[in-house]
Each structure stands twice: as structure tokens, then as C-alpha cells.
Image 1 (tube, helix red, strand yellow):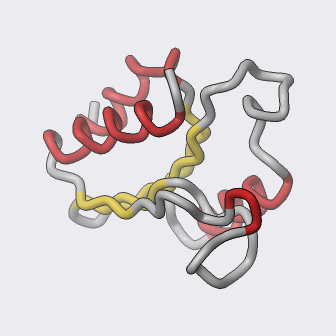
Image 2 (spheres, helix red, strand yellow):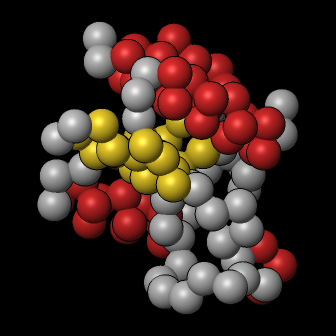
Length: 105
């Protein structure tokens, strides 16, 4: 599964459960972006009622460059967590826990 297909599927489920989400498709890949700011902003920002969550999406194997969140990504997740966001690093194999979070279970 590619990160793009994982993201598309996750956004579909988030919408099904009533979340409003924001995702930037290209946030700096290959040094090209129309977005400014500090590196590492999470892949998804989702809001439902008074809940808000941020998620970094990874499709690679844990312990590899594509599978682990960078230090910049972790820094963003932690600072957003400090101001009330739920934060997650999600992989395709986490579907049951992803759906539990999105459904509010």
C-alpha cells in the first residue's frame, strides 16, 4: 500500500465517521512545496466536535526511513499534544485501532 492510497482510504473513513480533515498532498517532497513553516507538520489534522487529532502516516516497515517518524514530525506531534490534540503515528496494519479512534470507541 502506498502512503497516498493509505491516506485516501483513511480520509474516506474519517468522513464516514463525521470528521473534518485537512491534508496537504505535497508538504515538501523533493524540496518542492507551496506550504511554508517548520518541517514535519503531521499528515492529517482532523476535528470532530471538541476533539481534534493529528496523525503522521507511515507505510514503511518500522525501523526504516519510510517507516519511522522523523524527529521534526515527532516534535510537531508532541507540541500539538501539549495543546490538546490527540496524536498518532498510524500504519496500514493499525486499521482496527484507527477505526476505533475515528468511531469514538
